[in-house]
Length: 542
Image 1 (cartoon, rainbow, N blue to C red):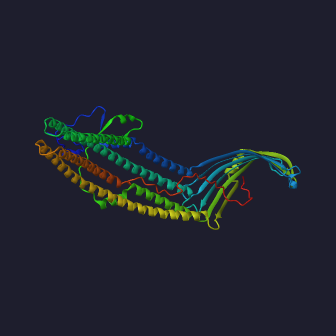
Image 2 (cartoon, one colour):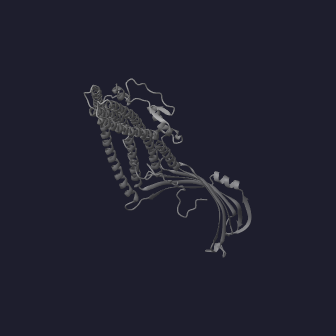
Image 3 (cartoon, rainbow, N blue to C red):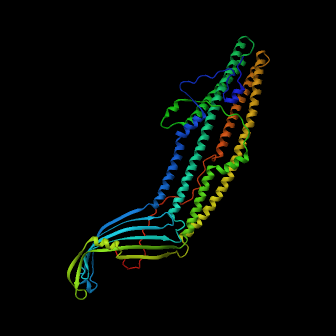
């Protein structure tokens, strides 16, 4: 008697086999693969996922770039100068005055991360020689230090360009982490779909093989009956034609299974170890049984609160708010408090004079560098300044135009998020309906497969006693094959719907473009060097 395909085994494991068959041991070149193992391999080795993961490191580097705006800057200058002044007055004589300097300046300045203030500390020294008739020192050595601080009072105080860049970079880093989690969800979903597709494709090969065996058995019986004179030769031709058609179906099923196997390999293979291409994958896990439909309202609420693309969009919205706040601040007048304090000391060879102005040189006195340093730290020659600088554009400024653009972009982002929330609710509801519809289709397909199996068995028994024809038996076998393939497809559709529903709660079904706000690129900002506020032409003592 022709062996019948067990419906329970098809429905439970995607494998159509005889109810009495025992599982055959895996071949040496076969890799039994569980779903968890497939997911683990993909997470560890998938190059596309690795690209997204590296993107998080890029954003972390951007944060580091933005933080360098507050790095102290050390600077030093060493040079020599020579200047010959033209004889513009009688004190300069007729040949002019030749003045030569060796000078150096060393200092540190830093932008502070709060209030946008900037401080600087510098040490200056110089050695000057001159042939001026009224000079008191030749050479003269000057040393001194200066401490300065600049504090904005309106523009840049609440937020400046460096803080805006740092805040945006931090949020972009958080968005990159969300993007990686989103890519991880999609990758896991793709692996699960590929796994169950391979499982169904393998089962389809078994179904097609069993159907071919049924057709071959019918053809053998027909040849025996034709020889016995019980059937016409046309019945053999019809049965052999059916064998050829089902062999073609088996070839297509095997090709599809190989394609499905490669699709799964592509997701889990280690690019550095291509040996997996030569190993046959054997999906060892069984699909989950049909369960109750999900709670749609709860699923929508979960997705709106936990979807990674919505979280990224909210980060982009916060970035746009930061940009608007920054540009609003930039419209304020630039009022800065400038203050500085310094001390100086003088050393060198001093001329001692007598008589009237300018007097005649009657001797010299050497003043050492130690004396100059003592003057510096004894505050003998202090210099300080305190004042305000004010600047404000007259007319329509660049900041005003930029603010108008940023406010429009902010409103656009709000509307995009609103649209994304609507799309999210729709996607979740559609995914839930697909689960419900697929579950109902599985029940219907299972019933259809049972009836087709019963009809095939009945037609086969009728054929054995001469009450049926080759055409009717062949038609019943075709219907059984179609019902079994349909059951496999509906069960695959159900598993795919479950996987898609689980994924859509955390990530969009397809990759969505970023809502990034313009101006998020990190630009190196020079640290200003405050030097106090002095009247034009006034000496600072250095």
